[in-house]
Image (tube, rainbow, N blue to C red; front, side):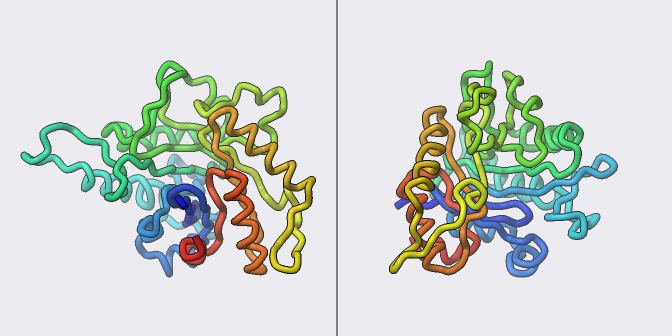
Length: 284
């Protein structure tokens, strides 16, 4: 079974087909994950950064109390990712043509999803994000959309979330950034035009839209209404070429967590939320 885990470091990072993990950047990342790519070694294919714009600089942190002068989007994400990609795409007499390999040695065509969660004013912050991507853009490392119809996958796929304005993404016919749509509202008339060209992934809170999960004799049980809601949302997304992702899934009891994981995988989510990356990787 392919597995996509997403680890978070004030953002978050994915694996190979289905699991999202959320790390607190100050604790689990800063202290237990000194290398921001440690989670990738277990298969994560996505990372997310919470960004705050102050005086022209994008700082990274889960909240304002976690911000420091040193923790910037450039220092924590852009530069480290660029360094890895340069090593993956060396220039030497042995390389006869330019390459665009991704961060994974065993799957060089696999993109790394970089979710950027704008925490401050959406328009100003995302404009700064677009500018901050220039080093990756300059090397041709970003997934792009051309003429509003052709996507060319690159080593890095940038997806704006949080306060990212829809009107800074959807109307732009030629771009190298995308939008994290709201999964639960894709079927509303005003969102009929949202497809995979705008949103490769659509996300929502499991706790909010599905609700509390009951525990049966051997595993957690979703009601028929809950399953119907889940299936409808995933189907709507798939019809438009969009992958579904649920965050805020149960983390305890373990039996309930594992049962929800199995259900989400069975129903066809694109990414599976997991608070414990190692546990998810071992479980599957």
